[in-house]
Image 1 (tube, rainbow, N blue to C red):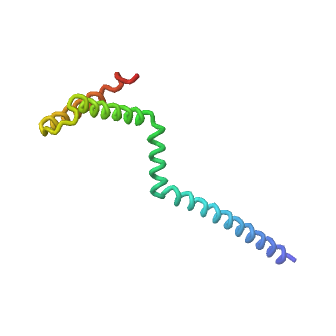
Image 2: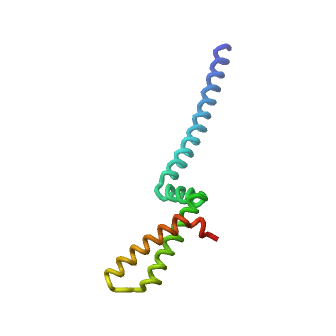
Image 3: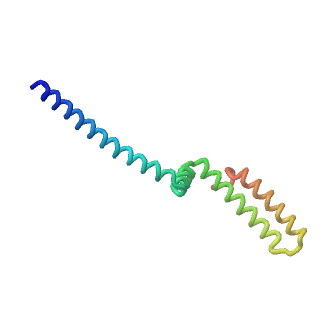
Length: 112
């Protein structure tokens, strides 16, 4: 009777280990799926974009750059219009560059 009792304990231990193995396999498969999904290029881009949109410092920089670029462009268009003279176009581009940089660097003072 002693051997039967030991065999039963052994069988129970085997069943417990097989159950544990099955649970760990399911967990491993789930983790693999999560990792696989997170490494897809589109999901990486989404997560980076999400981080960018939640960071207030980056938002501020984007807004400053947008204000500077649009101000530079508008300044060029207002002062020069659509000139076909290459010298005026070159000076207009230089003016646009200068205005864009000045406004971008000092946009904190300009924001309402």
